[in-house]
Image (tube, rainbow over all chains, first blue to last red):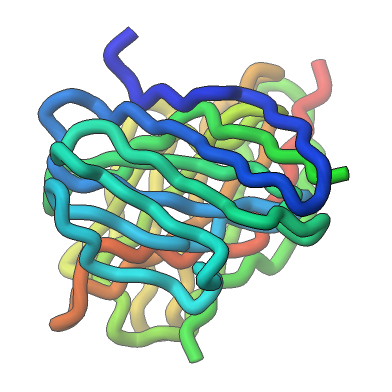
Length: 112
Length: 115
């Protein structure tokens, strides 16, 4: 499968713990995006990278959130001191500009 | 502000019927529009896209229509099948001097196809 992959698919954590998600984009895609989706809503943009540079961040990305793409390939999204409001599906997408963003299967986070 | 919304949150059709899903957008500067299909527990799947210099684009069993005058987008699915049952999202992108990075999604329409 040469699509976007995400790991883990599901994560259950206790409030206050840190979590990290990984995204592997389609190999030739130089842009990588993170979105968050809550039940019944469309995905909301969080941030995106072009190669290793983080070019845009949403106001949704509080200081507890950090994203990296150190080598311009895979990316990680870390949430520190998780809160119940962080429970959501975290989606990763990649593209080769100016083409379409292709999404991965998502990581479903549940904060207890 | 920027927003993309859907007129109908749910749509039920019989197998074989044609389906039309509508979307309104408010940002007149938007120049790229995409329809995604999302099945339960999965990520959004690309269906079809259209740029603002076009008013119609066809794919396999799907057609997207763009009316910039009234800022309206629609997705037509021909001969709808049970496998088409999913949530459908429209998304828009405003490249206009900023970036292609940020897609703004609507709330979604639940399509249910009855056999």
